[in-house]
Amino acid sequence: MAIKISPQRKPKQWQIIFPTVVLAIYVILLIAFPEKGFQALGNSGKILVRLALPMGLVFILMLAMNLFLKPSHVIRFLGKDSGIKGIALCAAAGIVSMGPIYAWYPLLMDLRQKGASSFLITIFLGNRAVKPFLLPIMIAYFGWTYTALLTLFTILGSLAAGYVVGAVVRQ
Image (cartoon, rainbow, N blue to C red; front, side, top):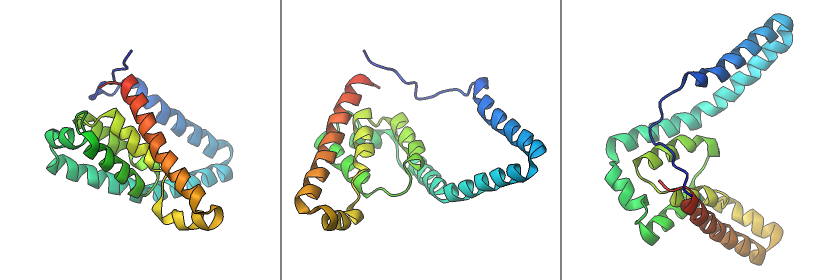
């Protein structure tokens, strides 16, 4: 049984409910408890500022992809028939990727809409757990054997997860 996800979703009116409820909570909080309300608003502003750079970079990358990367390119490098090159590319990209994971979601959805397979996107996400700049610290604490085995099993686990997700979620 395959789960079909439509690549082009139209916004639904119910999607405005969450932002409206959050806004209403802030208004009620500001009226009932102004000090706490402004503190909550300030904390939300700090989170927004922290998210601005990674999200901005992802949107710039998405803009560049939309300008220069055609669906035929994505399908060739990241499609179902991309073979070992696609696997290696996604594994390496996942390992070297930086920043918070949620900043990558819009980019990955864009790639998926252009034809990237769920199998390879899963491999990318799974390999984000391997961070080369942290390996020396990990070796210092746990030793070479542990670090090498954990890294190997993380990469193999991403392949297994990719296979399962690719089998269940067909595009």
